Length: 183
Image (spheres, rainbow, N blue to C red):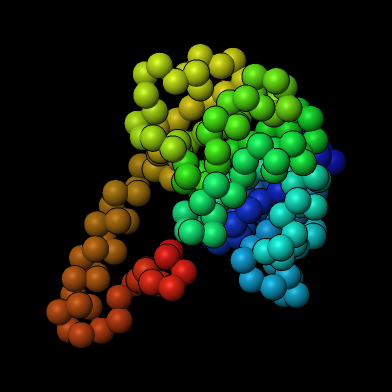
């Protein structure tokens, strides 16, 4: 991994933590976010703005998707975007299945344009039994559980109970959905 370039689309908590971990492997890390690229992000060597997707992809030996599913990210990665990546690049989708054109991704995996994929999310979940992704030797499939840890359910329960108390007291809630951003 040393000296390879990891591109991250979506620099929320997961994207930033991924960048931090990649630096431990001496990777070059580039990132893309929906906001202007004028504010630095820790562990990101180069930050691309929302209109600079293709230049970011052209550098990506590895691409991590950690962006939310919004109207702007629907179908964000398709055949044209995959073709912009170096041949043999690896796509890692922790985001939502709808962010990637799955048919285009499968074709790229079969042709060698993509050297591999690690997928926690799919356009249709659960992934249908006959889907070619199940049998591809260059694909790792997980059941939409990448964020699950032993303590995750306890944390979710604590946040829910705290939010219930806040709601009953008329106080602001934790982790509230921004209805404009849709995350």
